[in-house]
Image (cartoon, rainbow, N blue to C red):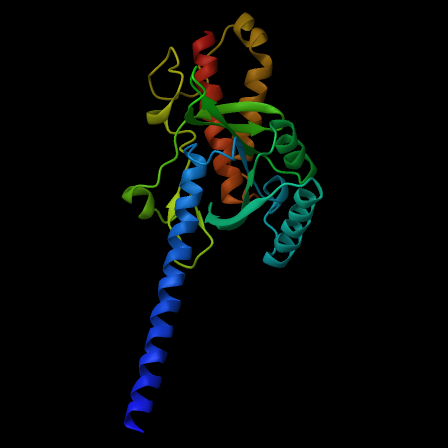
Length: 253
């Protein structure tokens, strides 16, 4: 009888250990799989997109509404035969999104427009002359225009300690990662101006006329970056592009 009880307890302990180990493996394999994909280490994945349908055009919506919108996005992706990995993150507030494998840039842009997103991210794998993968180049796209490019994904300890503006796998203690858009340390192309961003300088009539569209955009983004009825992510989006446009204006003078 004692032997039977001991065997039962041992089996129960082994089962619990096995379950915990499987959970650990799932968590680690999920994160490692994501990083392998984003670093170009998965041969079957040549492009990716980061998509969400939540909070269209920066309007904060209830969790239930955002969930419904993401379900529609998931179906839109399935209808096109596109597989995806569900992820979560924080961008001034919680966000659920998808990493979509082997999606074209045009499809990514179409999804962003259909679901009223201010920006989407698309990445394509690079290859050397021998056909060996070199990693991904990622594009931050507003509408159908590329705003910025990056060629690195970060997941070091400084990223793990972030409390906001990160993505992570779906597990409760999922590890975090970021593509460092709008961080000058990771610029691919160095602009001819390296000084800090400045306010709009005093312009001559000719300068103001020549740069009218750019100045109008700067003023519009400045206004949007201050609107309290936008999500923190939306204000961040406009604030970062505003800095780029201010630098562009200064370079034009």
